[in-house]
Image 1 (cartoon, rainbow, N blue to C red):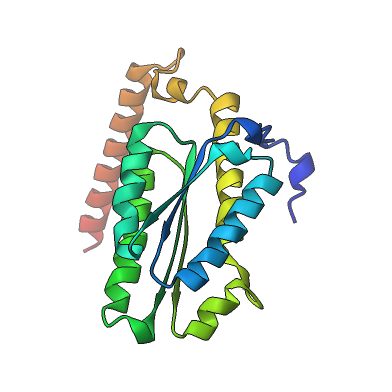
Image 2: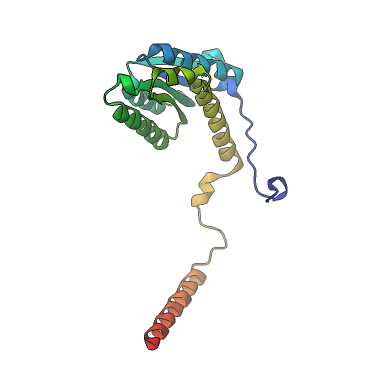
Length: 204
């Protein structure tokens, strides 16, 4: 097995200062009893991670379907370092359960990729209310807390990557890059492929 510590690979060591972070929590009012527990878990985790209480903004929308639009507006505002989406959809209570759960998750991911603002998804999609309660501080943990911890972790890794590597340089030409050598190599490969094809035809 590879000994990662001795392999010589570059390892990122995030050195994040959470006190300066601005984090938005967007939460649905639908199934408020469960979602409030998720919010409590997320806020508690953020503060434990070092985020200042005044750096946390909580905003409510009617349901999980409305979460992506608010998340998108907040991401585009440039005011927040990260966003946590919290909600709860229960199959027995929502006829279009699959549509709501899937499309909300898809939209949140797309917003994250388009804006490059870290977004974590703590929206529960459960078969029963009991399952939801278990995941909101019960036997199965608190998914709001997990989403908050994941967000801080992601922000830290991204910051470390941007600090450790000059990502802009990846788009610049390499100093000793020789286009003539590349073209010659491509010609050699093409000739080798042509020769291989000729041999195959002769065997037939």
